[in-house]
Figure 1 (cartoon, helix red, strand yellow):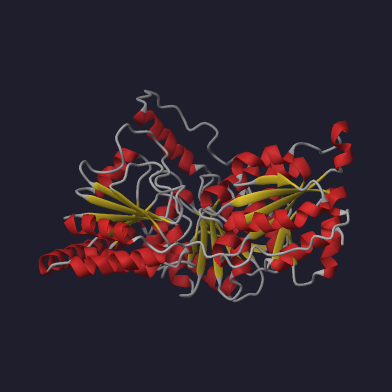
Figure 2 (cartoon, rainbow, N blue to C red):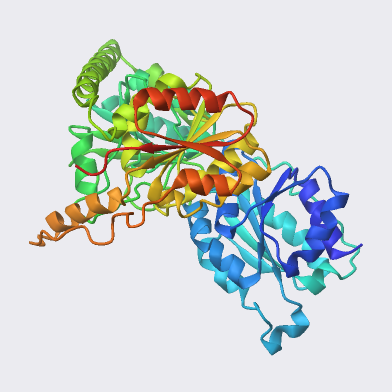
Length: 554
């Protein structure tokens, strides 16, 4: 059989349903083979970065590897930024690119370059198939490595002549691999002892909690020990219900502020994440002085990587959390239980006060125009159905989203990691393909949207009913905020204007751009207009765009 057949059969063996890509000449063997594999849907995308973003979010939404087809050196180069985001997100992905005929290697062919070296810094494994005999074992290993904790993208270069070679080595799947070890009893006991000894325990959760389906177990542990639950500043999933009284929200972006947020915490348990993605340097650590530092991870790569631990445990997150909860209950005295209950009641009272304060703030700013983002989000939340999926890249508006919406847990909310922008409207494509039965609303800032606006064409081409909402404030608001922080932190005594941070002259017209890519749209300025436009768009079976004028930096 030909190498191209082995490649396609490898996709079938691993249950691939969607192949995201933007093809070129060196991908001809793959493209020409698609007609014989109708079960694999090729998702045509007009920019390689958008293809990576869509496949990354697809992998996060369904748990299967996202597979991408890129085009030689320029195509891979276009995709590198989004591959970095997929790596930081821990998205299991197999990224492929066609490569020039290996017999041309010494002649410096057009578009030719060392693809393996280009991809290596942003993937877990980078390799080129040098013969058709290597394609089956490379693909089997690629899917395996992509899913090994912590998951992430791998890269495979496929020279066009190798795809046309004959081989007798057939495709095979990586098999049923059970990667989550049971929790060590001594480790469980150590974690429980520290939590029982704490007067103010706190828990920080990463996205792996959502991927492991461990949200309920995490909440159960938080309740039994009376701990607040925090997420990192940037997180892709909402692993636990955001309206649960123990949920405290996002941590800040520098160690000193993180420690301040923890307050009087004397034990901090980190579960399922890199901990921490910082923006600003501070010499102090992120934990209050004297606090016990604990961690549960699925991979040794993350356990104790950035912080000294008082106790750390490698195990599947779900069985580990269940085991620690059981150990705490067994060792909990009446006094421990009463103290935990009192802390939980304090969290509930704080949540009630925060909701009342937010209602008062919303009332105070309701008439401001352009609409403040909190008003816009509250309006949107009232217009969407309960089973809506939110994909967002609102950036400065992101902290307001869990205050306006109710997310039950994993699968209701998706955001990007790594800090690169343009992931939102690209990722919405992948989430919709993974969850076609649920209504999906994608929120994006106007600056972020311009990095991957080509995604609208793919939504129209594949008839994906996504409601794209562009928060148009005509500025890079996050950069203005960060410039203010920079001036304060480094004591830069300037008061210059925000140079090159306004998206004006000419203004961006998203309704017009969308129309040019086959997506009808509307521009709104009032809350009632927004609510009506959202309800109308959700009733349709095609993509729609709504451009909302929102307030800029004030």
